[in-house]
Image 1: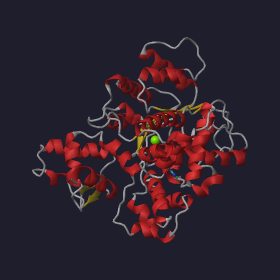
Image 2 (image 1 turned 180 degrees about the vertical axis):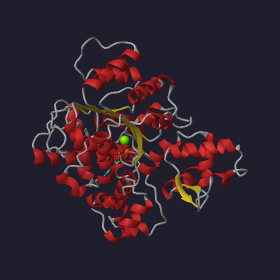
Image 3 (image 1 turned 90 degrees about the vertical axis):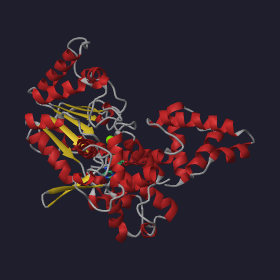
Image 4 (image 1 turned 60 degrees about the vertical axis):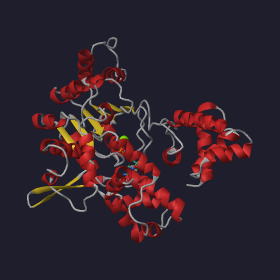
Length: 469
Ligand SMILES: Nc1ncnc2c1ncn2[C@@H]1O[C@H](COP(=O)(O)OP(=O)(O)O)[C@@H](O)[C@H]1O
Ligand SMILES: [Mg+2]
């Protein structure tokens, strides 16, 4: 994306939110940062002021952009975030052109749904569902008219649609490593099946709201018979009443944020423990709705719930595969014959591919062939910071095991580590299991033995972050 375009976009966003354009100093800081340069000395010299003054202005600018764009912006990630936001924005404009009315904020539609596409499944009764997508990103990639630019996931969509509409699954966990496309897929799914519901609701739990807050928020969407109760049991039972009376699809995204960092995966923070009760009752009690949980860590209780209750399932989202060429196409990269190699190296992870595509455009003139001549894989700064957030969550035994994996060229069985790491066998077994629950280890069966490995991107990250001096 052109620097000028990104700058103009940032200015438009700031103006839309504050009624003020970026001033010259803010623009100079942003321009330098977007070009990957150290801004303080240059901007201070050009403007004849102190570096300290420029740094304070920069800190305020990142804060302003964080408010405007709805996520934490810093000098390291500003370019990636602006480009991503611009990307969503342009697709919203494309939809505007195609369908006329879609509001420009962050939602597909806040209140009563207008259904821009005809119902996809003729068996479903076409209704006018109440759609409330809260702060969902604006994603229109599953609309037929835009399919060229996006990698649809037809088989994943059809499995999930089948679970929800035919098998009446009450609780679904959509799982997978961060960036693999859970949010995108769940919004695509909503778009595809929304007409079969009375209520369609999406909420992100990225700020770890308490279950009380989430339930209050959900209850407010429905017609209110009485005041919202204080007590959690009553809140849950009121919600269950609604889930019985109406057919609802509720997606709770970023569920991993309910879990403790530095603890085994899927362990609830103390103030979030009651979510377990909420999810269990959704599975246990009879109703006609579906709750879908998106998470990059498998909730602990899921293994048991899946066994005990039929209408509970989990779906692990994997590589986008060859369909990811649509991402590279829309990023306007060249050397199409080499794209498959690039997709393989970056595990068909759409976020990893998007970040790498930006790097290829900026430093290699968009030539994938040239980029592949470097020692692979190369991890762009944005990708490293994204991975660092995930690795910060590991326990010390998980970290010890994962760093050992980074030195191995071949997949190994769990027993390989016994007596090689100063941990007991049970600590090793549990660490491998936890790394699997975080989708950081790949597994394969060979002659009835399960072998585990670290993919090349994660291996490279672990080597450079934890093993090099
Ligand atoms: N099917 C897809 N086609 C094209 N881009 C995708 C697809 N799925 C995800 N992406 C892109 O990858 C990035 C990460 O996707 P997201 O849904 O946020 O992942 P997750 O929720 O698993 O972290 C987003 O920028 C999104 O636009
Ligand atoms: Mg997500």
